[in-house]
Image 1: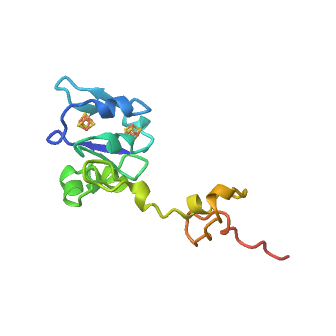
Image 2: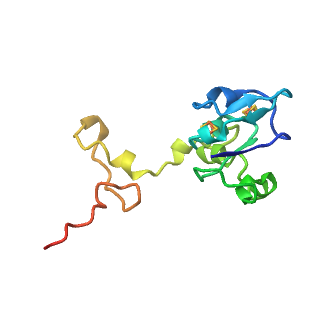
Length: 142
Ligand code: SF4
Ligand code: SF4
């Protein structure tokens, strides 16, 4: 859930206000975005991904963390290198490697289940939390 707008890093470009699919932000009188409807945040990270100055932090917790949480502290989040951390992780921003080039998601390489000659042989499925097709427990015998 959106927790932090850094007023020192923000350049009032309004991108976060525009891209938020649930209209969480208002534009404040000083031009800085205001988290006006935090409970409407769906933790989609889009605002953080689009922010050109890494001024936003979306906590991975899908409910408000509360004022005493480090996830609500700009100093703590900044010290941990997490302000704009999602944007960095997906590789958006000048000089960063796009996350799609580093993607190791086995589902994307193992699918499609239907043969497609232009795609070659599906890669073997790796054991991972993303692999839903092999992780079903065996039925119990009665
Ligand atoms: S994480 Fe998504 S829903 Fe939440 S404020 Fe950002 S853009 Fe809006
Ligand atoms: S996208 Fe970033 S720089 Fe632009 S208004 Fe929002 S917080 Fe500020």
